[in-house]
Length: 256
Image (cartoon, rainbow, N blue to C red; front, side, top):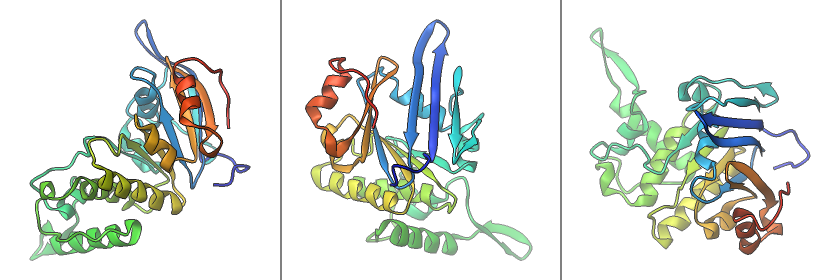
């Protein structure tokens, strides 16, 4: 990450109201290429709403967004994907009975022509899935022919990430609670996957309730409180106690 460079994503004055309820009030966010930005805060702090706006799921009531310096307007998550922004949610959205390759291409299957008919190109999907896991994430599964629910939590996470990074135009990857319900070993592997994606020059946003994981993986931390940005700190220049203080309102807004 080059701190003096223009941010990959710039969100300015983002406000979101649901009727009489204000979920976000004038929130700013900067994300640079090649960095992991963690977003933390208690339940109801506005983390999910902010990310749903970035990924096209929700439209802001007010505010603006820039991607690589260009105005960004989206009406759907599909629009976000077209702009190079994708997300891996806590549920992973994997079909447990399908193979890793079938999950990677679920909804965007590769096909080929046979006797004038269009059929699934399972061989190509399998090889592309293997290549993406190996080259982009450094992961080799014990088998590509098993149901996904037979794999470990970290391997399932790898498949979900591979599905996002398979598209060469991906610029921003959002990870929602990526280590939830994982044991220590699988958590370590998942954090390594996130580092690998960051090191390929992508901007990565991680939402997590685990401050230990946040301090292990992030370059900067944005703290949300009651729908506002409570502060932004460089991870190496802060500590868990300081971040907790901003989460509960014991410290004022600061930006790194």
